[in-house]
Amino acid sequence: MKGCMLMADTSNFKNGLIMNRKNALWKIVEFLHVKPGKGPAFVRTKLKNIKTGRVVDETFRAGEKIQEVRIEARNYNYLYKDGENYVFMDNETFEQIELTHKHTKGVNEFLIENTTVTIAFNDTEPIEVRIPQHMNLKIVETDPGEKGNTAQGGTKPATLETGTIIQVPLFVQIGEIVRIDTKDKKYIERIKS
Image (cartoon, rainbow, N blue to C red; front, top):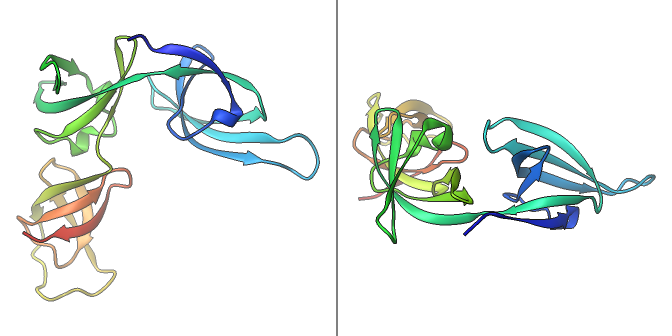
């Protein structure tokens, strides 16, 4: 199924919408409709370039026409890393695809084998890999914690099974599973086994 272009305008804006603008694909990260006391209404946005990851501020006149890009998203299973490439398998066809760091930038620090991800395609070109916002990951390295220390505010660095380092409360120990917010790269809670 091809990614098709649709004419839309600023009233269609929502986070995650992808548009073709200045011969590039841009994703709306944030937007705000502004109705000043004087002058026409406008929409202030933060757009992320799908290819480069660069984020820019862009202002649109209220009602301004845009080219919305309809993408197809399919579920894949992350299998393994092969050198510089990441190998995924389509959950329906069992077909495998390899993506580069360019496609997985921002999510590869949370990829572990058998993670279900969503890959967005524009026509046949993969443009984005999305992981769950909350994931349960194992702590593989951290300083010894203090049993019973549940005091608020005290944190220490901890290495997740993916190699990513985050801040966790002092009571978290090696081998424990913790829930992580992958968007903010933050500890949420310890998972009781």
